[in-house]
Amino acid sequence: MSTPHLNFINGEWLAGNTLAPNLNPSNLADVIGEYAQGDAAQLDLAVRAAEAAFPAWSTSGIQARSDALDKIGSEILARREELGTLLSREEGKTRAEGIGEATRAGQIFKFFAGECLRLAGETIPSVRPGIGVEVTREPIGVVGLITPWNFPIAIPAWKIAPALAFGNCVVLKPADLVPGSAWALAEIISRSGIPAGVFNLVMGRGSVIGDALVKHPGIAAVSFTGSVGVGRRIAEACVQGHKKVQLEMGGKNPQVILDDANLQQAVELSVQSAFFSTGQRCTASSRLIVTEGIHDAFVEGVKARLAGLKIGDALTAGTDIGPVVSQAQLEQDLSYVEIARSQGATVQAGGQRVACHTGSGADGFFMAPALITDSTPEQRINREEVFGPVASVIRVKNYEEALAVTNDTEFGLSAGIATQSLKHATHFKRHAQAGMVMVNLPTAGVDYHVPFGGRKGSSYGPREQGRYAQEFYTTVKTAYTLA
Image: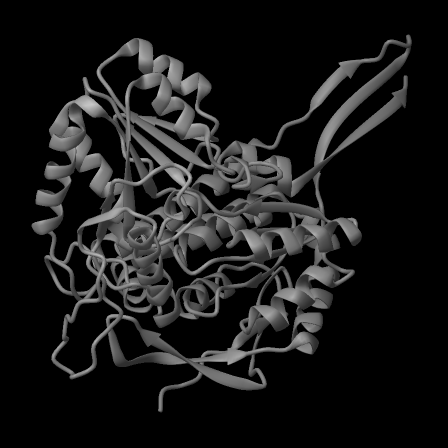
């Protein structure tokens, strides 16, 4: 039996009430490790430790904070292949994608190490003579972070790094399915020189740890990435508790393909957006909105590209599409394919579970990417988030109809257009109701130094990442001084 992976609270590694196995979705016989399952009492211990550490940390020197974050980023980058392999082993994205995500996590910590040194305020003349006005930003307190399973090191990084950079203390609750990457990140943070209590990791069930975290009176703010239903419940609880809240939730992202698009480019960016990382990205394109002149050629091009993809173990060289993260997610993905078929759509490719044996005799959660045509905007496949390797094609007459269908959704995270028309690209960038817009690029794939977030049902509260992260992790103070 391997050594258990424990929770990290107040600078110490503490056992939970029980242990839970972390399974490899590519190979169900592969147990990555056993991870502590905390309870509400342990969560309370972590919050109290963070509260005690906050006064000193929030007023500490910016150079010390910067050095600690830079050290964390440097170690992540030095170990990117190891961490990326672990990530792919527990989440299922290919090893190349896992290494890329680990690299991004290191870059995020490096970026916010710099932001520590770029904290700024304003000195403003008062409208009253003889009075000076200063506007500054201060940390908000103890921040609760609840992170999802689809980006198990990058999303914790882009929440933890700004929280610490701006002087907050942190309690992290990672997703149940992927504790390994969060634990590895916590272990790196534990050796960074950050004082005890400033950062805490409490693993366990969301219904136990997450609920206790959101309701704890010592938590000043909650940043959550996950499902719409859970996000709405968190928002309600935070409003009742007078807590600041930031939510990143669902998406039903459109990718528009106009008649004048470069066909090969349009096919590639659509396949990349919809199916890579097994479609398990909140920015994935699940609605392919295609004008009628290019529709048939586009569908044939996507089918041909899908036929050439290799589905298999995430750690095997040459794999393009790894497994779905869990049995429950696989069942959800397959059910939506059947729902689409029952409502009159056509499954042009994939949509079934496939066997990709690893040699151990234990299969994983593998699914052939599903391409669905003959769908209409009102069908469930085009209204509800699937969160898997499933994309539907909607045929439209022209750009105007494409834009209308683009915006006909309760979500608004990312939207893309493939066109060679500057007129249409410019108009789309302005009129697509989404927080992020891509022109001739995949909708999935963003930079770490610029704002991330959406509109409507996709996001709530200030943006994440880049300099805009300060809007959530700080509060503004205005000070008046009589000269």
